[in-house]
Length: 308
Length: 141
Image 1 (cartoon, one colour):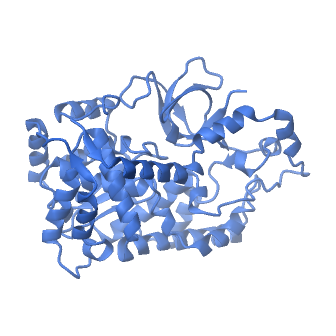
Image 2: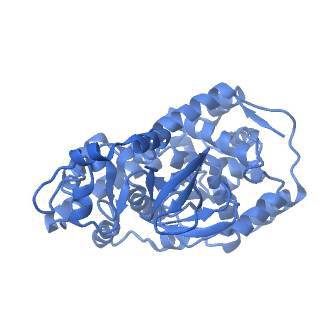
Image 3: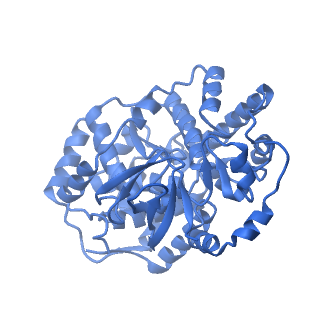
């Protein structure tokens, strides 16, 4: 069975991803560059400063794309800790395990399957309808959101949408532009030399600011409509790759639409209305035939949700 | 000259086929360097430096920059530009997180640490896909 997500959209989407990924991975062009690199010309560019204090990282971090996966990981951990300051974790081994098996399987089918320390999922003990994804792949889903999912495919849709935000680095893009100038100047001093105490203090302040930029957008204001649409597109592609019907994304949004309270402080506040997302997706997702859900899939979902 | 890349994630697996469900040959660690031999979609067949056996790794685990764990002046001198070198543990790192925790004692990382310990084995994932009538990698359209 094949699920079709409009080919034109798919191609545009892939184009966007490869553009966005160019800085991080620089796949083919980089390889050709390396292969054809002339060693002597490379050596001639080496700047021979005296001593070991050389600004190798002078370029520092100018945009969100310049963070290494390691730095993205440390940003993500603190964002995750702040989400958990606001929402209590739901401490239930079975549900946590089920959400992680499903979520990690989905993440592996994304365009960013490897993050610094992998994808990890946790249910939040809240009736709010919400889900969050930190840079580097800590993903949170509320019990209220679980309640909107009628089957495993719909839960897969929610998790795939969040993986989409990670893959597209939406969290990092919430960092205010001025912030890069702020810590760029400290990181420009990045050398083999250790930072001074005041430089470390400055770096920690910049870190706090960075985290605050991300949590303000993620928890309070929400991403732009175009980011949400892009995450939906990624979700549809990922779902097709794993074998879930991407129309589950639409049925899940319909269920959410019915449950969301207008003016609520949760998903309703931080996301475009489900109906507008449904309209967009319905035009683009078609299925060749109705999927049949194997019994085992339906059963494991029911069992996990019973205890949730 | 074959292209060399560095592992940019904490740990990743080298596999005998370009798929996450393929058999693991060995593990690679952060900053390990590999030589690229072949490309297939988003997977590269690589040989780790100073090790005999090669295998497949997903491109998202690799960086074109040489990642240096404990940089000395020689590494820096031999890099042509900042585009070629990344220093591990610089910038927003473990120390910055520690300092952040000192300043923000109310922020609790217990559950973040717990989450990170959740590991799903390859067998569990394979069974999950199989039992659920889902597509294992490489079988998809």
